[in-house]
Length: 262
Image 1: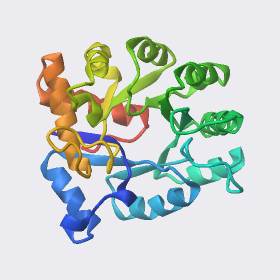
Image 2: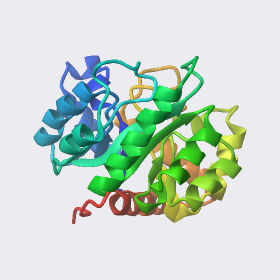
Image 3: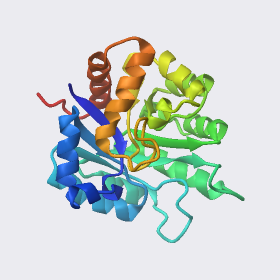
Image 4: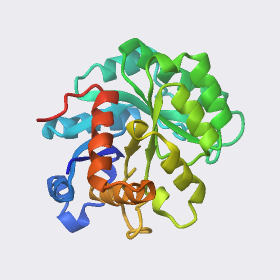
């Protein structure tokens, strides 16, 4: 079985049980069938640091971007700066970017403008977007439409919205990615969306070290645990985890324009 963790933060993992050795965490993931990893940036400094990890592992890809909850400051990227960072061949996406009205307050025009710059950079360099949205679905979808993000597409990561939002994102050419939240007992609405999304438009992720799935809920998450997400969604849909793994992996490599390993 070949699974992809389509969204993780390898530089933030708790590696204490691996004696601080990232390679051992990735080896354990491979034993669970998880064999490729997209480590996603949340700051510009992290973008640079993640490239060092990606250069050390052939099965690690990275993104560049600034998370919407990172405060506005002097390191705010311009479009040219994002494009320059994203020109490295190990960088397969722009993000994570988007809008988060849950953890930010006040006048969020700066957050919306940051989002627009990321979209414009992605379109310019022809690399897909990784979208974070929380309690901001209307503005997120509006800005994606206004900026013609459908021309480049990407992923709605760690999806926690309703079916209408998912359908609108699908109509814009985005795929929907589910994290360990889908395994939570109270996540009924998300589970219904996971059953409805076309199988060839679906991805799985950990968002590790956050949001560990059942049976590890409340613990530090890691890429190996994406298997639990895949198994849960496969059960929801009444298919085998092997079938789900095969299709989500195919979709991942198509969306991010990476050659599928033989």
